[in-house]
Amino acid sequence: MVDAPRARNRHGERVDAVPFLVAAGLAFTLVFSFGPIYGLAYGLSLAASLAVSAVAFAGAAVVAYRQLVRLAPVEDAGPLPAGPRFERLLYLGLGLGALFVGLTVPLL
View (cartoon, rainbow, N blue to C red):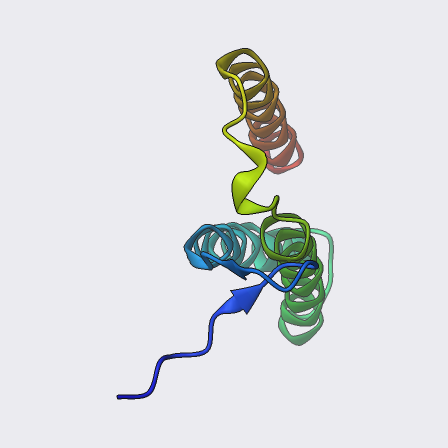
């Protein structure tokens, strides 16, 4: 049986690609949910707003790939302590909440 190709980090070690796929899927959902609406609200044509959304998704996918696949730590690095993980999660949640509020303000 042939093994499926696996993503590798910058050290050549295999990396689980599921976090990247989840992040890219969420980016696709958010960008293509809000992007065309905002493009039409600001006077762009549908084709132009879809093109801008596609570019934004590609950028988000590249950033997610870089963070979650290429820069993934080596396996023997050990787990990250709970304090920094919680702090990162808190800042991410606050940033995402601010982004959602910022996205709804122009449409009011």
